[in-house]
Length: 195
Image (cartoon, rainbow, N blue to C red; front, side, top):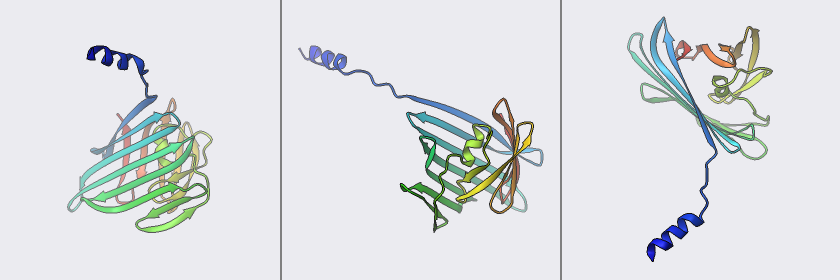
């Protein structure tokens, strides 16, 4: 009798399918023609939400060994930024930490324990540049420091991103996919090459 009851419940409840799709991108981090790390970025779609994650690890040696980790966790909903968390560590010590949250009519941005407000809408941020060519995009939000960056097309599917401090990164695309980037990472300048 119990088996009929279990079978009835299994057949009575419809299967629910989770509408998710995940894309994972991998890049080598190149410094002075040597692979010194890697970046892995993922994009997971679930209904109207898109979750982006990026983890970068760079190990190199100047005078002493340096280990730099970048961790991004970003959520868009209906093509609008809802939340972004960024933590950058150097030799296992927090170097920078920024949290951005949409609060209904503005963004609250806390960068290294200092709060600020952004009243602009955000529909494109830096992490999206890993996944899609920024055609027709003139600005992007920097999850790292909570500012708006300028994007300038250079022709031939190449773009320059200029941050609030004037530092420039160059992004190269082929068939809409990022193939290479030259990054001014503040502490370390490096190239990213798609694997």
